[in-house]
Image 1 (spheres, one colour):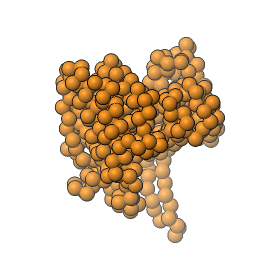
Image 2 (cartoon, helix red, strand yellow; image 1 turned 180 degrees about the vertical axis):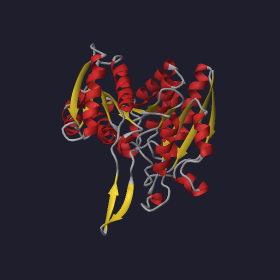
Image 3 (spheres, rainbow, N blue to C red; image 1 turned 90 degrees about the vertical axis):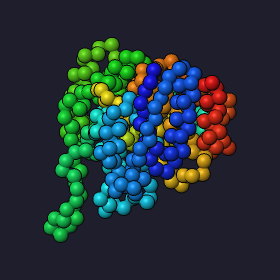
Image 4 (cartoon, rainbow, N blue to C red; image 1 turned 135 degrees about the horizontal axis):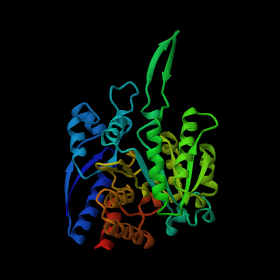
Length: 353
């Protein structure tokens, strides 16, 4: 089979980890007889520098025409001016909207060999296997009006938290579908005691829950969910929540795995290419040093194989190779080891081959 994959290496350590994810995908192609045609484009700060736009129309069109999109990371201090006309993060939001990817999936699984890398007590981490489904194209990040103005001699900033019922329902439907393949438990996270948008969210969660009587639905306030992720993470299975809550909770959950460099993500829509990226950000402080952990990017490539290309055997093989490398002691600096980015990828690719 032949597939088209658009690469957006982005900024900071993005190009370094995406290069290793591409090597892993090429190894998969060689092992299983596929052809992956890669097209590399600029997005984020590097695109602002060259084109004056964080996401050009041409890059978005290339992404829309692909079978899947693999993203490194965007942003950095160079482009942090709050008064700038464009910022790397605007390109990321526009890409998500342009691809119609409304749900972000972030698996959080603690590898037994890395339990000591987490700041939590080992007994809290045994059996942790969580899947967070974050609504991705609504809420505060997209609601209007948005902006700043002078009013009565004071500067005023406005963001709007807005959700339509269909946006909530499709995220919940996906969460229940995924829960049916796991432990049949869904925790719907909201702030229904305060926010009107959360009350709509909870109302629809109840409706969708009735359509899936074999799945246990629990409503959890976001502050309680934040505490449970630390005090009892092994009791959680599928978590579904709105955009900003999901953004915060998934970064908190990343410490369970020992390092943000470990975790992949998949952003999916009802049709079209999915968007795959590690959750770690551009890490400008270590960019160019060759020490970034490529596991998040490589495991994102595995999710790409599974969800966009529907190559489950290939995805499982790549994940197994990563698990075996970790079990054998392969570690980058963030995990207390000495392997370079390339060497860590070598350990995975060698086991895949």
